[in-house]
Length: 350
Image: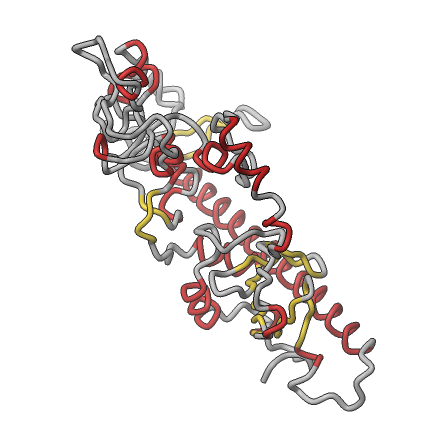
């Protein structure tokens, strides 16, 4: 230790022996200042990582077990409160009623399959619902799947891609879901950098996640050209064929990119397409500008009476955010989900 050179207190990736034959040491300052042999430190680090992962898996199993027990107890209470005498496996023991809709419990409570009924065919399945503390998500076929199954499916990496651009990635240049996102991440079809569009430069330079290419597909329409005349020969904005009264393009509004470019018959502006076109935006936390227009408001007022008879659920219509039914169904069958069939209850399907 006395013969060690300056800087040898830092960890050496190659092991306990440095190229000149001296011993490598690692300095630890967590509780006490001490030197540890590099090999011993690496072994301890590996064991620590392994222990952390085992703890995480144990907590996850406990959480799932408690979640399933709560659901099982809830179903048993449903059975005990039922007025049906000597119920068969096809009756209320397997069923739940959610928002006036009947569902059959499948796969030990991992899936709730909607029972078809002509009287409720026009009612949408709630987008999310919570039963006995268990969160369920709507699938594209109108069924409900437990949140733990959806999360396991996404973490597994077996996500089936949908040929639809990711709105978050296209408009911001990045997506927090990463590879687990079901939508397409195309780096060549992202929105324009507004700093570059405004000033012709960007502080991030080449590292900017947004585009610095001023093409008609990503640059908004020129307002002067839309009104009939543009005096700038080098105008950077798109000279589109869209009329000033045309609806806002959904692709450009939500993603900042439209493949049609200047040929698109709808307006390319930085506005919320839903609000601009209908006067209503159902996107929770929408960050796009909401500009009210008298023509849209008049149209909404005229059609208000006709919309009174429209019946829909709180979750709205089935959209792209719903869980992919086929993918999750295959994942449910492939994933054993420990203890689903241990101590089977009478309400579980055979």
